[in-house]
Length: 200
Ligand SMILES: Nc1ncnc2c1ncn2[C@@H]1O[C@H](COP(=O)(O)OP(=O)(O)O)[C@@H](O)[C@H]1O
Ligand SMILES: [Mg+2]
Image 1 (cartoon, rainbow, N blue to C red):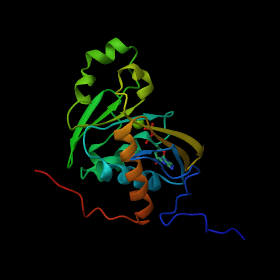
Image 2: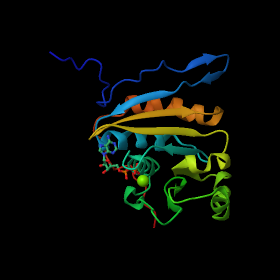
Image 3: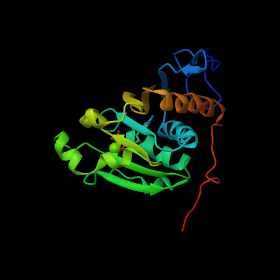
Image 4: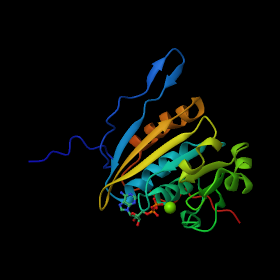
């Protein structure tokens, strides 16, 4: 008989990596990999991340079409208190902004063909200040990304199943990732939308 003992309260499989290693006062956050078995679980991860953001973070998203990048950004928007419906697949729009407790700039660089083209869209202006940027197809503009960023790679495992690896490349993203892991662990299976902030 299969046991569910290895599942976390929120239904996802536990991380295969070790918890954060504490070296002196700075926590070194190791990559965190989890398996999402549904778009709801991906959404829940996004919500955990959205709730822990403090402003100014860059989230670089990698993975093929249909991997769940936009689904994850919807969760992030909701975790920030914005309406998840505001997040769409902006096929022809490079930047789409929405507002929760922090501004969120959702970018999709799928159609970008050169760094020059990307620079001309003014994306760099979003990397300072309080705006959270979530970038799909971030690999198209690696050279323009801030050094300290959260990197998330999604890959297909089965029809409803995705492997999601999260990595922090600096101290700010490291702290966010450590908090996100805690928030995700504590998050119940079904989360309510009541906390959503609505702005007129
Ligand atoms: N575990 C999962 N996580 C995320 N999406 C999933 C999952 N299982 C199935 N899906 C489906 O895969 C599709 C992902 O689409 P989308 O988020 O737009 O992908 P991308 O932005 O990477 O191209 C959606 O139709 C979603 O319902
Ligand atoms: Mg997308």
